[in-house]
Image (cartoon, rainbow, N blue to C red):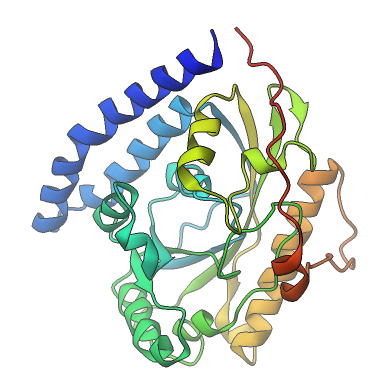
Length: 290
């Protein structure tokens, strides 16, 4: 099948699943039904398959409620992957709420929208704490932005304030999660193919998504690391640093295809350098299997 026909088929299947389920989810949310937390996971499982993702899970998912899942962030595609594995809502930047279609989907999954401006930190800390206090699982991308997928940017500690230094009625588990895109049509995804899955900087979403729809099968490794308790860390910065080191080592392991030493220090791309680094051009994809 040609890439163009594959794009059309996937787009048609995606919309055929998404559009009828949106009003159903809206009703479930308004009713406060428990199914409002379960339907998104089933939905993301279907759409992940439509998009051609084959996910390998390493480790055990936390069964404690609430759990704050802390993951690296490569692109908007991460939401499909993690959403297919977890009954949880996302914490996202406020701009996402204004995106066509995806913004509506985010609201229907009861996403917590946060403003990255400093003066809004306390307001959003309280919003996150309220959801965790109600026993809801949440997914946090503490890098604050997506990146090239080759490394993990330092985690921002501000949003960890919702679980550290806040009086919650339920003890909160924090589970670091590493998400890595490793193969495309059986071939390792290195720097050459990384722009197909990494959406960052000034990349246009529409053209990036159109490219993704024409790809074949993509293999993804999601590793759930050992959950931790917040009372084991003196400050939220210490908690953020721990999660960053664990997630970074998991991404490095998946990218290298071999275990990384426990005491190793992951390489982090300095924010200034990341901002100035040239954006790679999208290279021709390996042919999709018929």
